[in-house]
Amino acid sequence: MSVPRVSKAYYSLTHWHDFRLKLFGEGIVIGFFVGLVVVAFRYLLELAELLRIAAYGYLRAEYWLFTLLWFCGLVGVAYLLNRIVTAEPMAAGSGIPQVKGTISGFMKMDWLKVLVSKFGGGVLAIGAGLSLGREGPSIQLGAAVGQGLSRRLGRSRMEERYLLTSGASAGLAAAFNAPLAGVIFALEELHKNFSPTVLMSAVAAALTAAVVSQYFFGYYPVFDFWGLPIFPVHYYGIIILLGIFIGLLGIVFNRILIKTLNIYEQQGLLSGMWKVALPLAVAGIIGFFLPEVLGGGNNLVNALAAKDFSLKILWILLIVKFLFTMISYGSGVPGGIFLPMLVIGALAGGVFSHLFIALGQLDPYYSTNIIVLSMAAYFSAVVKAPLTGSILIMEMTGSFNHMLSLIVVSMTAYLIADIAKSKPIYEELLERALSKQGRFSVNTASKKRMILELVICMGSQLDGKQIKNINWPFQCLLVSIKRGDLELVPKGDTRIIAGDYLFVLTNTDQANQIRKLAEECIPHMP
Image (cartoon, rainbow, N blue to C red):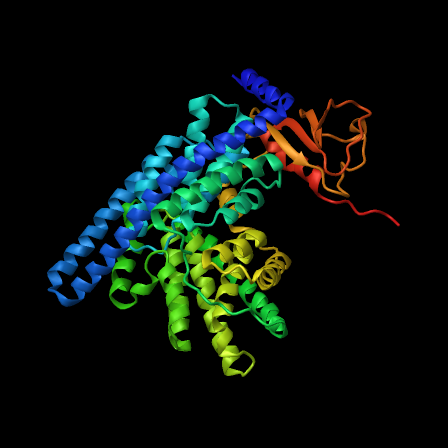
C-alpha cells in the first residue's frame, strides 16, 4: 500500500502548481462542511446553556425532590460520557493533541467515529456545565471532516496532512468567528510550518467556514468589548509587568493541569463513569452558588467588561474557575481548555488591574484593556503561540487597533514561559498520550513513512551546504527542492540555500530530527 501513496505524492511534487490549486479548491469544500458541523455544534451548546440557566433558576425555587432528580440526570450524563470515550478514546479531552498526533503520523483517527463521538460528547459535557470549551472539539471536528474528504477522494498521505490542517483551521474559525486566528493556529501550532501551500488551503477553509458561521450567527465577536480605548504608550511598562505576572500564572496552569491528569490516573477510588460523575457533581453544586463559572465562560468575560466586580469576587471567581477547569479536564471527557484558559486569563487581568488602580498606577478607564491583554498573554504562556494569541483576541473582541500592545504582552508572557522551560500545553498533552500508549519511543514508527515539507531557515545547519556534505538521518530521501517557482532535481553538488522548500521522504520518528537540521541556527565561530 505504501508504494501507491508515495507515487501519488511524487506526482503532486512534480505538478506542484496544480497541486496547490487543487488544495485551494478542496479547502473551500472542507470549510463549507466544517462550517455546517461547527454551526450545529455551537447551536446545540448555546441551547444547552440556556436550558441549564433556566433549570438552575427553577431548582432554586422548587422542592428538593427536583434537585435530586437533577443530580440523577447528571449521573446519567456521566454514564453516557464514559461510554463515548470508552468506545472512541480519540474523542476524549481537547482534541487538539489528537489532531497534532494524526498530522505528525503518530496517531490514527477514524474520522466518522470521532466526528459522531466528539460532537455528541462535547454537547453533553459542556452543556452539563463542565468548565470546558468548544474550540478544541471544533478543531478536531474540522480535522475529521478534512480526513473524511481525503479518504473519500483517495488522496495521498501527504495531501491528507494538508486537508487535516485545513479542516482544523476551519474548525477554529467557525468556533470563534476568527478566520485569521484559524489560519495562524494551523501554521504556528499544528503544521509547525509557514508554508505557502498550507497557507493557501488553510485560508480557503477558514474563510469559507467563517462565512458559513456568520450566515447563521451574524458578524458579532465572541466577546463584547465595543469602544475599547487605545492603550497609551506611557503605560507599556505596566504591560510588561502584566506579561510577567500572566506568564507565571500560565506556567502554573500547565503544571497543575498535568498534575491533575496524573492524580486522576493514579487514584483508585473512582473509575469508569464515577470519575466523570465527580466533576459533574461539582458542577451541580456550583450551579446553585456560582453559576458564572459553569461551561466555557464567554458570558463571564463579557460581564467583566460590563460590571464592576470587587477584588474579593474576582479572586473567588479566578480560584473556582481555575480549580473547576482542572477537575473538568482531568476527567477525560470531550471538551477543550482553550476558552476556559482565556476566561482564567481575563479574571487574572481583572485582579491585576484592580491592584494597580488601587496603587494609583493605572487609570480605571483602561481596566478593560488589561482584561483583553491578559487573555492574549495567558494563551501565549500556556500554548506558547504568541502570534495566534494576539490575532485570536483581536478577532474575538472585534478590536483591531491594539496589535502593538497585544504583541508586547504576548511576547513577554511567552518569554517568561520559555525561560522557565515550560512546554507548550498541547505538545505536553500529546507526549503524555503517546507515552501512555507506548508509542513515543524511537522505534515505534520506524515502518511508517511520510513526506515532510521543510523551509530552510537562514543560518540553519542546511543553509549554504551541498547535499552530499550533509549528515542526513538514516533511511531518508530528499525527493524535491522548490526554489520560488523552480523545481530542482536534487544532486550531490546541489547547494541548499535559505528559503528553499525541501520535500523529504522519511520515517515519522525522524521528522523532528530533520526539522532541526532545517530550522535551528548553528553558532558561527569568530
